[in-house]
Amino acid sequence: MSMHIPEIWAHEMNLQLRKRYVATPVFNTNFQGEIEGGGSVVKIFTPGSVTIGDYVSGSDMNVQTDPQGSELELTIDQQKSFNFTIDDVKAKQSVADLLNTYADEAAYGLRDVAEQHIFKTIAEGAAPANVKTLASGLSASTIYDEIAALKKILSKNRVPLEGRSLFVSPDEIELLESSDEFKAASDMGDEVKRNGFAGRVCGFDVFETLNLKEEDPAAIASGDPVHRFLVASVSRATTHAEQIVKVKQFEPEKQFAQGVKGLHVYGTKVIKPTAIAVLKTKFDEGTMV
Image 1 (cartoon, rainbow, N blue to C red):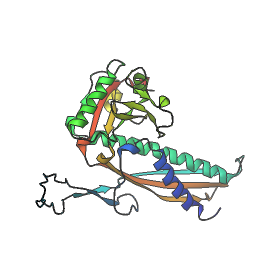
Image 2: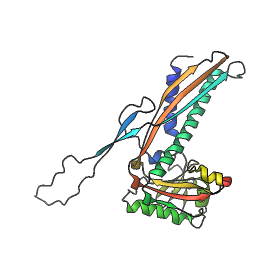
Image 3: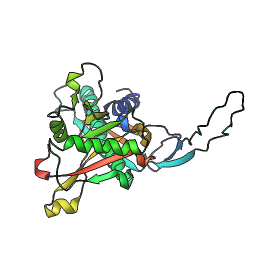
Image 4: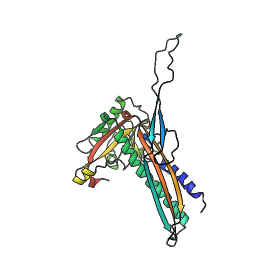
């Protein structure tokens, strides 16, 4: 194999990760700095407010000089790896082809794990007043009103109407599909093609994902229902930075095999807590889709 193949894999895996994220509509990648590995720190710049004033014809306008923004630090605190080998003897097809196939599978797995972290960070980073917890689960008769309440939270916080996204599980999608207010993606033709896109409701683009479960070991151990959350937000609320920093091909010393290992590092930070609304619902662990 060419010595350049690991570099190609790293480049392709970075591209595949970005293409596959369902969460893309609610995070941005507006950061500065190099990601060299776990522990790296990058900078996030958030602009200050622009003053709006009256204009009087023939009079000089007041000039706002250098609106003060803020600079935050984002620590790359997540490190995930993969490491697999293909047996030269047992392989029934080209080992090179198999390595490529499994590298692609690794990218899918890395995306799934990273997305769980992204949604957990977003849900935990919402302003406390923007989080509502239901004593029971949702139903076909209540889901629309609860989503409308999330819309109201964002609107009262002056979150722009444009670019609002809502993330729900397959269970909520099933409930929405029985609602007259829900416009399913299947009825929209080629209007939108995005990962997980399911349709529109209450001004939200709705996306389906299984990565909205709130892990609560104590609740699971006791047999109590655990929470799943619905997340409503916009891209300005959260910054995410990531990089596949290492991909290496290797041959195990004591095997006739070839392997690939890699390292994915990333960090996620909520920068506008008031631009996130969260609904926590109870569900039975045994009935999760």
